[in-house]
Image (tube, rainbow, N blue to C red; front, side, top):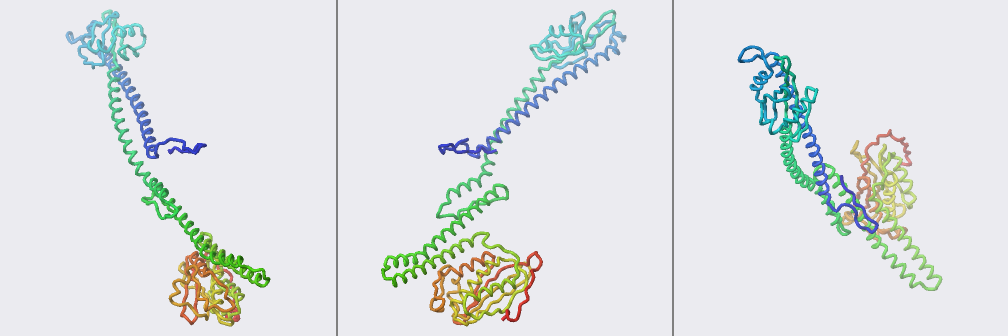
Amino acid sequence: MMMIESLSADGRRQGSPLSARWKITAWIMLTTFVLLVVVAITARNLLMRDVEIRANSNVTQEAAEFRTFASEGVDPTTARPFESVQRLFEVYLARQSPGIDEVMLGVIADQIVESSSASARDTLIDERALLEAVSTGDRPSDVLETPTGEIRWGQVQVDNLAGEGGTFVVAVATRPGRDLVDETMKTLSVVGLGGLMLTTVIAYFVAGRILAPVRHVRKVAAETGELDLTARVPVHGRDDIAELAETFNAMLDRIETAYTIQRQFVDDAGHELRTPITVVRGHLELMSDEPEERRKTLDLVDSELSRMGRIVSDLLMLAKAQRPDFVVPEPVDAAQLLLDIESKMQTLGNRVWLLMEVAEGACVLDAERITQAMLQYAANAVSHTSEESQIRLGSKFIGNGDQRILSIWISDEGPGVRSEDVPLIFERFQCGPAAHRTASSQRSGAGLGLAIVRAIADAHHGSAWIRSVHGEGATFGLNIPTPVPDTPDLPQRALTTKEMV
């Protein structure tokens, strides 16, 4: 059980100043101590009860043996039954060897005539109190409390021997047994205290080992700063503490990812927006009062502001691409998806759009994001080709089952991509040479379109690719892993010859 610390109204911590390690150790010590006390009390009670049971048993046994001897025994000197009670007591008690805590008496007319153990009677048993209890009591056995301790006694009446009457008394003192129990409990207490100290040492060591990952978590949390989010907690084992470390590391991964996205967004925005802001500010400062010049300046400012808006939208799109809900895969019909993409491409420019091949079948992907990526490819192709140029589009399935991949591609007749630009074409702010763009599409881009395409492919666990020979056009494509959905195949749409061409 851990104590919870809270903050007071003035911000100071409230609660125990002990560390978690000492709190765990203290609770283990307290629990062990309480358990030892309960065990000691229970054991002492049981041992004391056993002493009383043994004393009662001894009294009962001696009384039974005397009864048997009195009814069946004979005087060894005459070989005949005893003629007097006193002789009976003499013979019987002479043959007994009682323990230090036991005494047997022959009483006639409230006087002790024979005794089997004078030493025990003198040291443990109060003779006067015992005789008084026997003479005044009418029970065959009882318990007598004396200053020297508790005595358990029993009596057997003897009559009709030469007209005499007597009483055989057996008494057992429980003090020696109780003293032995007390000595035993003292020994157990010493052993228990030693065990408690050993348990404390072991608990302190084990608590330290268990809380070691927690200390690592605290250390990593203290070392984690704005400039370094790479520290992680080492994970050992598969227990709850290991799960805590894994959860903490996963949280740091999310924080690092979010921080990286935020920093990249800020850096990219600052990098790309600085130029249009400078252009807008410079032209507004130098704007003349002439209507024609004023109109041109406002048109330029409007154009730059529109470009800034597009840049911000693209940057936001790239930032959202890191979120787990950026794509929402759903079962779609691959053929219908390509036909929808082709119909939307035709509005981008006056080109000859050719549908070369169509993959048929159901697949699982985010149709909206895939359409967005392919339209970006198409816009890129339009910007690098002239009117009436051919732009070809197609799709096909590669592989089967869980390894199946939907490949969608678009090919143009533009200038292509130089081999040295291919590794960088999908990076941010990588624009193609302006000389290759058509006059109708000289709109300046920020170089984020293909980066968005790659982000969409990565979100689908796929890839964006390019094949090109400089001066002979280029083919851009997406390879999207898409296993067959569990749902029944979606309705297929029959393709006409016109749609295929």
